[in-house]
Length: 110
Ligand SMILES: [Zn+2]
Image 1 (cartoon, helix red, strand yellow):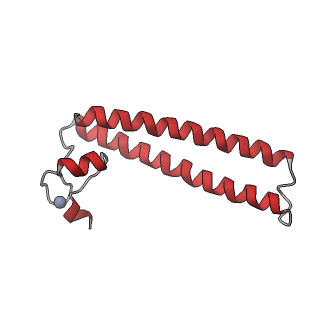
Image 2 (cartoon, rainbow, N blue to C red):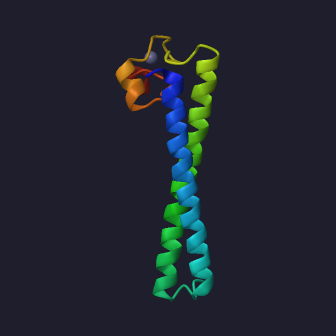
């Protein structure tokens, strides 16, 4: 599969995940509005607050991943994709399959 198709598939699945997470987050906000979530001594409120922070972390991760995918697509456009940004060597296909947004080879990443 070529790099652009792989990235576009990755982009679509990340967008789906982001949409689902944002729906979860919206449902949690609604649920907490219905309960006594502001009361820190309310154990249910504390659980909801914890779950909300978990989901908002996942939302931020998905958003960051989306920006990485867009940056990788831009590199495909100008022909820099698949080449290590540090040493200039080609990034092995296996690494790009596992991590399509990789900007460096394994040696430079570690
Ligand atoms: Zn390198």
